[in-house]
Length: 143
Length: 148
Image (cartoon, rainbow over all chains, first blue to last red; front, side, top):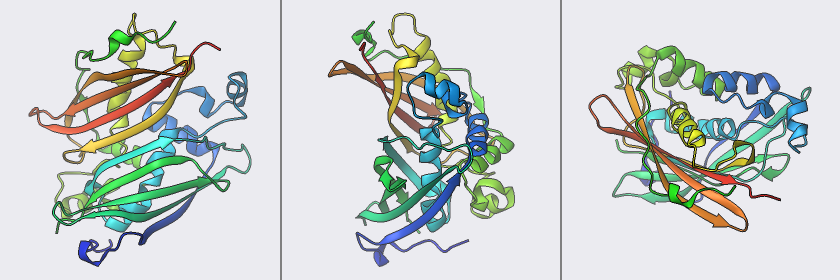
């Protein structure tokens, strides 16, 4: 497990987390079961197409969930995430054969020395385009 | 039918309490690619000061699910689920969710707004533990597309 980052060592703009995730249709079925979101646009092409979508999409909440993980790994403790928000701006299309690669990077957006928290701003992309807007986590770095 | 503007401010009855299971936390963690030992290994969680494994930051969506179902089922809400798009999501924690917690969620409709023929419904699910202490507020903004 990594050591807790020290707030005073951080500078706004520092990239602290980066990871790629490969989603497959299996990932979507697994998330449906774990979360209880069984909307069939997330696993049936025919249903997705019938409502005007280009194909099966990842759950927005799956993208939100995985995008937090590189920051959790950086801070070393999932319990240190005190606030997490996103805006869903573009869908992640998951091809039945090749899946989809979602890339996440996180940089320091704001430091609060008094509250001992850091805001980490995420950039989350699929196919070269951002899929989450205003994606921000606030983590506690209190020793 | 447009979304009923009188929904704004409505507080729903609390949904039945939810007992957070260790295996559910592990299952959810695996589904969101959470590999931190504190999410999946009770020994690692205890070493970090928690009573048991800790839910990933978005775990509260499992609690929120039942409250949003109440909203969608409300007879006078006018929310057609087939027209709903998830716009924004936020989780604000007072403390992490830990396996063994018995949690109760209560939904409040914070706002209903109209925007260019669409409606935006902001729903706040307030989650407390068995002592009544706040754990997390999960806030969703749902965009309900108007008639085309």
